[in-house]
Image 1 (cartoon, rainbow, N blue to C red):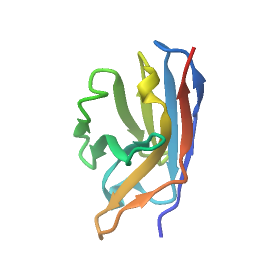
Image 2 (cartoon, rainbow, N blue to C red):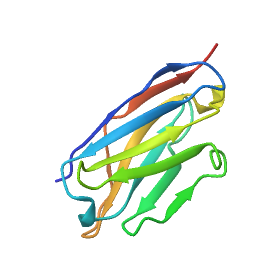
Image 3 (tube, rainbow, N blue to C red):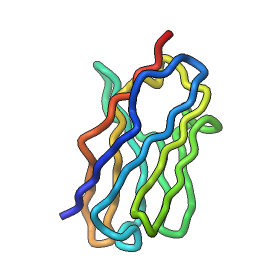
Length: 116
């Protein structure tokens, strides 16, 4: 079983920045990919970005150029740095991992609100 704990959410003004963190209970070497999804009120959960085991990143078009995913293998933590935030970025953000053995896992989520 994989346990994921997100942190770093909060209220930020449009144009501001925020960094989310996700601590995993397993080594990242047991994952094919780690990253972030988000879900806004009344909308389906959507991909924000992923980073593979070998360090290749993939981002949704809506956040490309504004978000950066990174990881610390020793700390077993993945980060989402978000810059130039927009009101439409408001959502619950979920950490995600894809184990090499199969399955998909999400954390409990952390709220990000972009408002003036």
